[in-house]
Every structure is written in C-alpha cells, then in structure tokens.
Image (tube, rainbow, N blue to C red; front, side, top):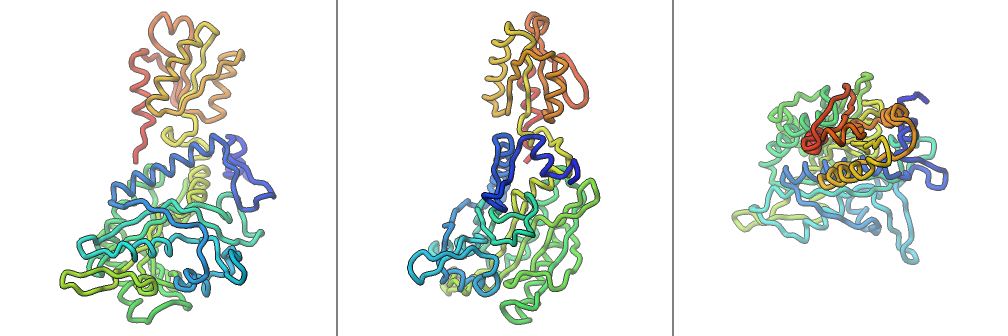
Length: 397
C-alpha cells in the first residue's frame, strides 16, 4: 500500500478505520467526520442554489417497490434482502430513486411546479462481494448525493445544460480542473424501445453541448432505465475517476404512476433526471485525499487552526482566541502540552493543520500573534487575526 493511499492517510491523520466486524463499512473518527460533514454541507449549499428541495425516504422497502423499479430483476444479487414478515421480502435500499418517485406521486404536481427538483443525502447498502471491497472506494454502506428532476420533455435539455454548467466551479473547489465527460448509451439489458432511447440520447447530447461540455460516446454504458452523462475527474497522478452523473429516464415515472397536470387539464408523464456530483461521498473523499496527498484545502481540513500557548500564562489568551474562532464556525484546537514550541509546530504540520497560531508573552504584550501557514510565518495584529482566518477557511461553495 502506497503512503498516499487514502487508507494510509486515514490512519496517519486519524480520520477513520475499518474492521472485520463491519466489512465494507466505515468507523468515522471525529476528525474524519468533520471532513465528511463539510462534504455534506457543500452538497446542501449547492442543491439549494440550484433550486432543489431536500427529502428523505425509508431505508427498507418491500419487494413490490423494487419490482416496480426493476431493481429486483436487474440488481437483486447486489441487494441486502430480508424478511420483515413471514413470506414477505424487503430490501435495504441500494438507491433513493423509488422513494423520490413515491413522494412525487403523492405531490401530484401541475405543469406550474415543473421542473420539480428533489435531493437527498441517502444512505445506501449494496451487497458487494468481499473480494471487491477496497477502502472507501468500494463499500457496502455509503451515502449518495442523490437528486432527481421531474420535468416536461421540453425542459429536459435545459435542465441537463443547467447541471453541466454547474460542475466546473463545484469540482474546482476541490482542486479538480481536468474534467472529461462521456455519454453512456443503451445497454443490452434495458427497459423501453429503441425510439425512446434515440430520443433520450439525443436530448442528453443537446443539453451537454448547451452546458459547455463535449462528451465522448460510450456505447452500452447506460443504466437499464436510461442513458447518462458520466463526469470524470483527473487527479494529480493522472488517474481518471468517474464521479458525477446525470441520467435521463422516461420509464420509471410510468412504472410508478407519476403524472403532472398540464395546462390543458390533461395528465402527462414527466421525464425524470437522476443526478449526482459526488456519486458516493465516501469514494469522493478518498479521491480528494489521494489527490491532495492528505494536505487538504483549508476549508476542508478537519482541524483548520491550532493554537500553541508558550506557557501556562498564555492559556487564557489562547482560550479566548479559540472561542472567537469557534463562534465563526472555524475548527480550532489548543495544544497546551509542555513540549517545545518547535516540536508542537512540527506535530501540527505532520497532522496537516493549515494554520498554527503561537501566543507567547511577547505576542500578548505587543497585541499580535505569530501565524504560521504552509507558505511561511507572519506577525498579525490580534484584532485582525479572526477576520483573516475566517476569510481563508471560508468554503468556496
């Protein structure tokens, strides 16, 4: 295992661990969960800006739902099946789509409500083979940033374009600038006829172009219910990772009886777009960790500021500064140990803390602090340090 493997970095930075009692599932430590929560909040801020409303569906659904969605026939071997009553089968959800379909069916939207955009940070379970499990890259329990857009067919291309136009600034905030896109077409095992797939593939291509993307064709790579655009990210090692996706689906709304009332009073089926930016939060975090080799951007770092009081006499000043930073939602720790300042600074750098603040008698008396970051060190006035740190750790999304 390479030093920059995310499993090594997770151990080195005390982020998470795995153990045989829960194969393919993660034990999140406080520092790792801090990063995880930042990913969640970045996703929530993004979908709110894009006009989505957050929902949440059940974790266990009976077989009838999975029969309707097609997962029982096409995906059953990857589902955790259980018996909730004698002779009544159910499954832990591997995706959030059926729950969102049931919600929209009961909302009974009109044409004025379209496009209707729903989002969920949904916990999913998939019964992966034990030999396929690979750290955060392949898990049995994970969270998808699942979103679904219900719209008229005339709105499909503009919704796809909207999604495509939003991805570069989103991924850029994580340090990914090299983005490529594939249009994955009809697989052999699929729902619907060729005419429907021709229409869907053409609309995805039109939306991608309008959104500033030029996808390569990937025949046969679509989902069983529709074609998709797959967003790939290239990391600093030259590896390509497929993360985001948007899929066009004409079939599941019909299977779930989802309709909207059009302007003439008639009932019509909406098109359904399945979209995600992370794909899996856990997998995306692994990619980000390896891309940055553990040295995360300050806004994403689990510990953004470490304060080092030189002596006991500076503890009060350190606690006051920490409180002010915490009030601004900055993640801060105090290292009050009696080790030398050189050793404590080295330890903070080893933990990839982006900002270290040293407070000694000279700093207290002079009204400044000694700020050390990844580029060097500087003296900053005590009255300016909080605003300065708040500015440099502010989430860009």
